[in-house]
Structure formats: C-alpha cells, structure tokens
Length: 188
Image (cartoon, rainbow, N blue to C red; front, side, top):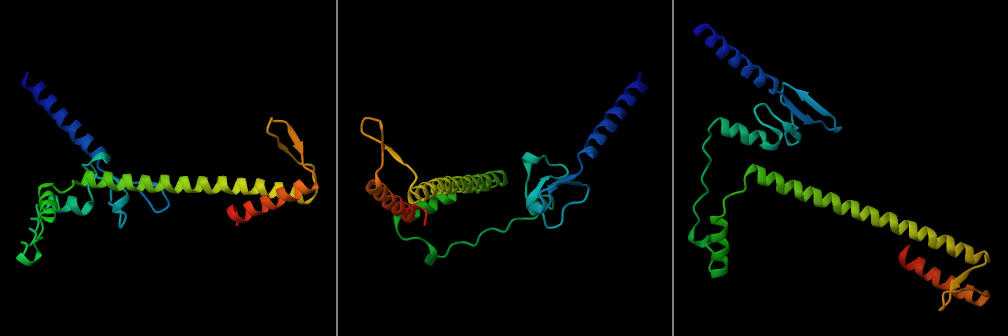
C-alpha cells in the first residue's frame, strides 16, 4: 500500500515538473512582426514580450520590474518635500492630497492605459485615412463632372418637382464656374 502511494506522489511530482518545463519559454514579436519562441530572453525587445517563463501573457510585467521584484531590491523612498516646494493655495493642497492618497498604477493598469492610447491613436489614424480616401473619391467625381461640362457633354439637373431639366449653354457655363470653385475650395 505504501509503495503505491509513493509511486502516485512521484508521478504527480514528475507531471508537475514536466508541465512547468513545458511553459518555460519566452514568446515575443520581432521587428518584422513574426512570432518568436525561445528558451532565451529577447535582447532589446522587452516591450514586445508576450510570455515569459513563469508568467502568463495577461500577467506581463516589464523585465526590469520583474528582476527588481525577484531580487527583493528595496525601492528608494521619495525625497521629503521642502517648505519652499509646498503649494500655498487650498486647491493645490487638495490636488496634492489626492495624488498622495491614490496608489501608483500597477504594471497591468499602466499597460492597459498605454494599450488604450495606442488603440485610440490607431482608430483616429484609420478614421483620417478613410476620410482622405472618401474626399479623394468625391474630388475625382467632381473633376470628371467638370471635364464633361467643359467638353460640352449633355448635362441635366433635378428641378423643384424632381424632373430632369437639361442645361443650356449659359446654365452649363454657370455650373462649370460653380464646379471649378468647389474644386478649388475642397480639392486644391
């Protein structure tokens, strides 16, 4: 009976050790965006680390912070404020009090904040690119319309009742002037 218990404990210890070694690798994206798996940490690419030995991707901490924690290095206390550095008005005192009372952001909170700012910047850039592409498409249509008016192609506009009214030469010239002004203003 004792022998089977010892064997079971030994098997559990081996399984636990094996599972730890299975996850003892580094995972990061290189400069070209390719996923890299290695048992050696990346050199100079610590910001792109997705997984480190003993840490899951969602628990990422910067390598320097993890080394400081593992070495149990004491954190230097901030220098005490001198009387000349202290704010004089009550609003500044309240702001300083709130800053003192609020704990510093954790590594995860700081990561989430940076991630949100990057996502907002990417969304803003995508919105600007879409607006620029739409504007260019509208300008191309307007240029084609102006070219057609210059070449004397038959043109029509919708009347107040919704029916098409073909432009005569004077109306075509007025429409060309209006279209050219719009091109200069919006597509120049």
